[in-house]
Amino acid sequence: MITMSDIIREGHPTLREVAKEVKIPPSLEDQETLKSLLEYVKNSQDPEKAATFNLRPGIGIAAPQIDVSKRMLAIRVTNEKGELIEEALFNPKVISHSVEQAYLTSGEGCLSVDRDVPGFVPRYRKVTVKGFDINGQLKTLKLRGLPAIVFQHEIDHLNGIMFYDHINQKDPFKPIENAVAIDR
Image (cartoon, rainbow, N blue to C red; front, side, top):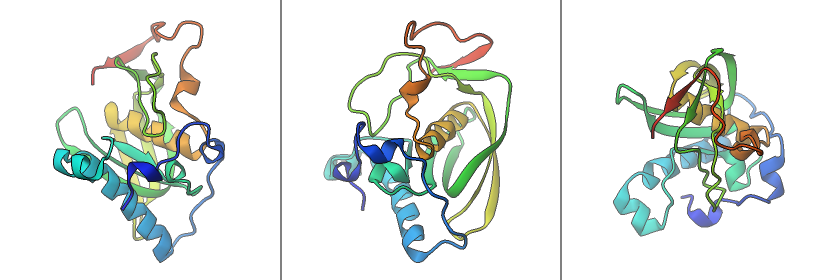
């Protein structure tokens, strides 16, 4: 089981690497890693388990955050209709996106960043993601709003990009033109 002590923090070199593709069909070891990523987000959202295991709540996590430089991630978040989106994927890729952007009014946070980093993070409002599930089956997901933002945040981890790399350094709260503000 992944705990907070397994999560590496900003400054660790793995967080700036481009993660390697996972061979499909996935090995048992890779499947176990992917399962543990999803288990972390599930457990971290359960107040009792989070307290028992000292877990910081999260809605997404990528393998590089546990010092595994492979292209895998897990998210667990509700969409604007209140439906639970729970996905764990190998080799996820954004294959298309909207022109329209979105951002979280509260900014973004990260399990690997132990400080508040104020500012708006521009993301695409809608994305289509392709990847392989735990059994190596190809999946295509059409996401919008918060789930789309979370996927983009986690895919950035697979490419060695941190969320604050996207923040306008001179004016962190500069309005993002033609973007939808999402309250969270």
